Length: 132
Image (cartoon, rainbow, N blue to C red; front, side, top):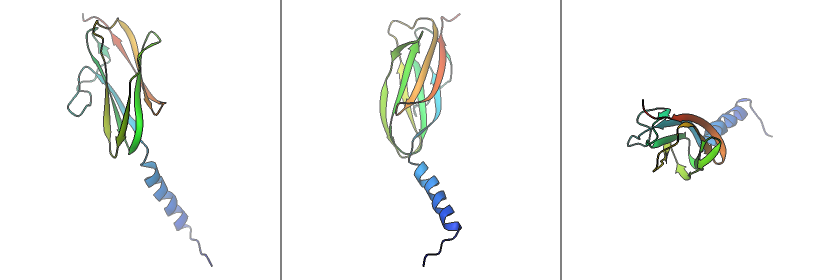
């Protein structure tokens, strides 16, 4: 005869929540700036860029597993670049992206939307303007 206790189902549920949930990657931060640190995080955060700046975006993720991290860069509602990078990690990691224009960016407002396996994970807006 089987005998169930209230503690056993709760323990199984807790173990699954801890163990099963850790296998999924999650975006924990999105950073924008003009340069990167050696660990690929943004060195100095900003949302204001000059037309000849490079724009760096770092996506910090936690958890373990494999996924595709992407960013959709837009200006005036038009997609100007949409790079994607496959990632595979067992601990927290950083994936970096760079937006560069050899002829300089037009002034105005831009958007960077980050995706994790095709699902939006967050948006950052920034402005390009001539230095005063």
